[in-house]
Amino acid sequence: KAGVTQTPRYLIKTRGQQVTLSCSPISGHRSVSWYQQTPGQGLQFLFEYFSETQRNKGNFPGRFSGRQFSNSRSEMNVSTLELGDSALYLCASSVLAAEVPYEQYFGPGTRLTVT
Amino acid sequence: DAKTTQPPSMDCAEGRAANLPCNHSTISGNEYVYWYRQIHSQGPQYIIHGLKNNETNEMASLIITEDRKSSTLILPHATLRDTAVYYCIVRVKGAQKLVFGQGTRLTINP
Picture 1 (cartoon, chains in turn blue, brown):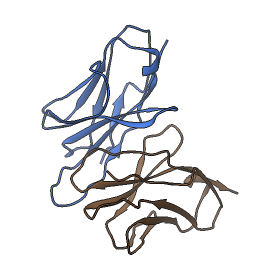
Picture 2 (cartoon, helix red, strand yellow):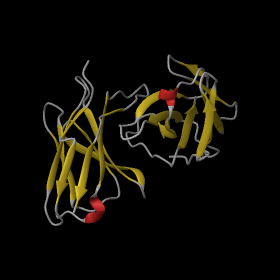
Picture 3 (cartoon, one colour):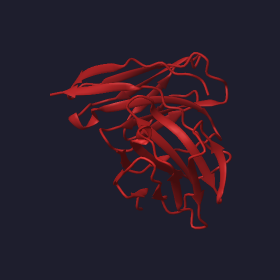
Picture 4 (cartoon, one colour):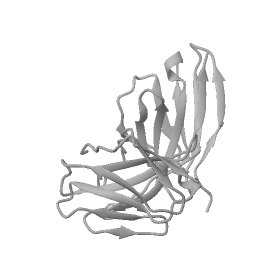
C-alpha cells in the first residue's frame, strides 16, 4: 500500500505571496491532519479534516487554511507569507475508528522557505 | 492531553538495547501512550502504543508502569538506523491531535 504523499517536496516563496500544499492520504484513510515543524517551536498541530470537514484546529492565524476533497485528498493554503512561515509542513493520515486507538502515518513533508 | 517529560538526548552502542524513558505523571485513565520517531528530515514514524499493559511489536517493546505515570520504550538491538528523535505522546483514544514535546535525540554509536 502506498504511503502518504505530499507535493511539492520543496518550495521557495517570497514574503507576501501565498502557497498551496497538497497531501494524498493512504488509500482508505479518511482523516488528514497537518502539522508545522520549525526548529524553534517543534512539531505543532495545524488542523484536521474528516469527510471534507475541519474537525480540529490548532492555534494558528487565519492565514493558514485547508480543505479536504471527496477523495480524502487535502490541501493547505498559507496566504500573505511571512518569514516565520518557513518550516517543514507535514501531513498525516489515519483510519478513523471510534472504538480502537489508531496511529497516524506521516508523509515526507514539504519544505517551505520564505525569502 | 497530559504532558510528557523525556531526556533531551541519549547515546547507545550499536547492538545493545536502547531504553528510552518517558514520564507522564498526569496521565488520565482514558489516555494512551504513543511513541513516534523522526529520522532527520523525514516525517515522524509510528512505533508503538499502549494503555496499561506492556506491548511488543516488530520494532520495539513498550513497558508501562503499574501506576501508568511513566513508560519505557525498548529497542532490543539498536542499529545505526535507529538514530532519530523519539517522541512520547499521550492522548485520548479518539483524539486526532498529536501534541509533540521536544523528544529524546537518540544516537546509536558504532
